[in-house]
Image (cartoon, rainbow, N blue to C red; front, side, top):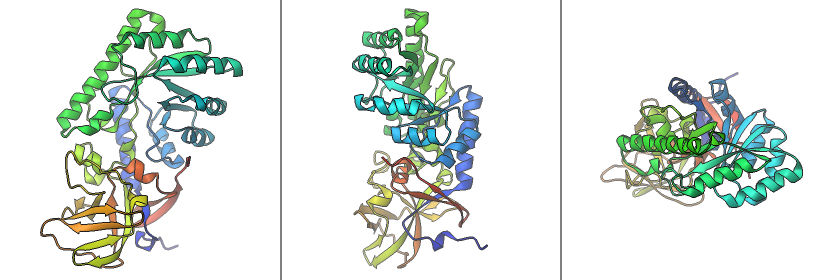
Length: 378
């Protein structure tokens, strides 16, 4: 049977380069193993059972999810150790119970107001939960301040609840995306670990009963660029590394030739001052990308030579409508794209972009070798 080419695809299409994907998965697994930490990849990036299985086969020990829909889909596929890495909303308790009946599920809290109702719910329905405390390591989103007395109080409250088991502490260095140099990412990576190790020691000093079994850190930039994983860190939770994207390229986490996920689009209109493609906001997302590093980055990068990793930096994906993307020339660059031509784009944020598609076209070179479903629709 003749293999189909990506040029045969109806656009826009989501492409996964199988060779790059498998290399990215292997590289992070080796980095975790050599660093003496467990790897629990975040599957929100790809939401794909086939990719999750490749990560487990490469050495990952469990997975991380951001929604109960993700947890349910991966539990149904046989994944038996899942961390739901978003602090629990009160309306999620029933869903947590249903999923916990078919897999091991760790949940997160970052506030004492969650503990009493969660403990009471678990007691009423007759089951126990492993609980991780979310810690703020400098990224002001979720997480308790580990330097505050409230942090120890929260851990004690969980420990004293009969149906809750304090499993450990978890953080996410999301501020690693806000810096401009590899050196700055490395600094944040060290700070992330320092905060967690210091808090773990504080808990142990308070009581040996509060010793965290899990000390978990996350983010692809810090996992990729940390000089070392210090003793006391037990787990890393990168997600984007499976695909990478242009934000990771700009940060120095990867090279263009590491990017495994691209969007294939067609030129649908040409004019002297602009070109329009059929990849709009519903294919690329409206993530503005690393504008703090490259102000005129546009909504993704057009690839000029895929194998060599050359980008067409003279053309910007300037604006997105729902189904239209408008390209403009940067400086004196001229348009060389023809009506009907297919172009390949590295998105700014592959996690958001991948979530816009129902399937991935798996490719080797320019040949389509498989088709994988994106799971976990809300």
